[in-house]
Amino acid sequence: MSIHQHKFSIKPIVRLGLILLLLPIKLVAQPVTFTNTFGMEFVLIQPGSMVVGKFQPGTGEPPKEKLNRPTLPASAYKTAAEMAHKAFRPGFTVNLNQPYYIGKFEVTQEQWQKIMGTNPAFFKKDKVKDNNAQHPVENITWQDAQAFVQKLNAQDKQHTYRLPTEFEWEYAARAGAKEDIPWSEINEVAVLGGTTTSPVGQKKPNAWGVYDMLGNVWEWMQDYYNEKIFADPVPPRAGKEHVLKGASFTGDVKNATYMTHAAGPGNGFDAGVRLVMEARK
Image: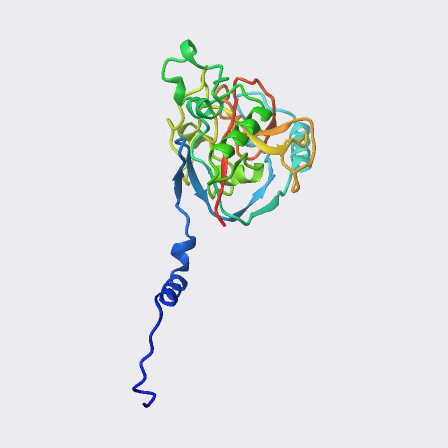
């Protein structure tokens, strides 16, 4: 029999292996959004980088022509320029090398109740005019948030949940923006200027489809607070309090920023949580 006459055959298991090798992208691809069995929705965040802690305040003098109002002496503008120069911060680059899922919304009172069996929120029943179940849970400590994560992981062994790091939260909140959000856009996405929390998802999402990153409730981070306005390149390993990000429903546009951070426990009634779900490797 010549080589041209010989017939080769591939066993089914080998054929399956060849097919799998030809489809690596489909096998490792992860859904852009995911909803777990408790109705918690997550958005996939891809790796990337950002500059954190950048602060470049500007100053300026009024026009030289005569104004119809009092002006400050020239020395005051000189002092302001010196103060701005002293406060100037170039920032530092943060690289996020792994994909992760972040909560599309803040954890609601209904979701907290399902996992914990109780609802610690202050804004419920007659304190709100609508369905409090869809309001973000609040009135929780960092330790409460960790207990929630622990119980959720125990009940959903298919996935791993945790609090976001400050850098994960800020990267997802910015959604690709290099600078802070303009004041003219804040009211479109942020829940501010209220007397109670609001149901999640009532304002526009950010560019990556995540809601209420600014306003409604402050959100607990995994990191310790460094006692500064801005984060450090390496978060502290210990501290008195943990970081809060995102601002409160009681705030206004001055409070709504991705760039700075606060620390708990704050007012209590406006501290809630948004989770990260780890992407499969």
